[in-house]
Image 1 (cartoon, rainbow, N blue to C red):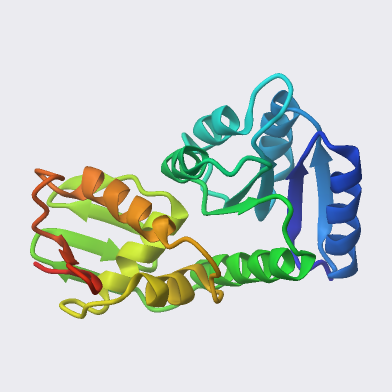
Image 2 (cartoon, helix red, strand yellow; image 1 turned 90 degrees about the vertical axis):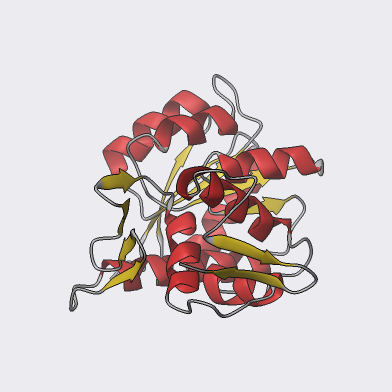
Length: 229
C-alpha cells in the first residue's frame, strides 16, 4: 500500500530523479511536473497528498503556482529554492506554503519533513469526535478544520490552522518559537525561526481587527507567543 501520493514540481532533471528515487524507496507514489502549468494541471487531476514545489520554474514560477493553488486546494506544500534571500522565504510562506527548504539540503532532513507533514495531515483527516475550541468570538473547529469569528468564516492555510489550533488549545500559555516549530511543524527545526514569525503575522492579518495592535495573538518579548481571549 502506498504511503501517500506526492507531486514533485522541479525542472532540474537530476534533482527531480534524486527526489523521485528517494521517495519511491519510502513507499510513496510519485508524480512529477517540470513547469508551472503542468504543476497546476497535475495538482488538480492527481489529487496529491503533498506537493514539493520548486520556485524557479518555466511558464509560471513556484510563487504564482502556490498562490493559484491556495485559492481552492489545501494540500500541504513544501517549497524548494536555490536562493538564500530572506524575502523569498517570507513570500513563499505568506502565499501559503507549509514549509521551505533551501538547496542544497540533506536527503535525510527532506524525508523527515515529508513524513512529518504527511503524518500531521493524516491525523487531521481522521474522523473523530467533534471538538471546537472557543475563545471569545473565535471558534476553531478541529474536526471540520474550520475557523470563524462570530458568524464570519476565516480562510486559513493548513499550517496557519495548525499553529492557531495549537495556541488556542493552550490558551494563555507562552511558547517559544523553537517549541512551536517542533510541535506544529513536526520536526526538530534547524536554523531560522522566522517561519513562526511569518505565520503569526499572517494569522494576525486574518484574525485581528488591528494587526499592528493584536489582542488575540500576543507577543511576549524575549519569550515567544500566546493566545488570549
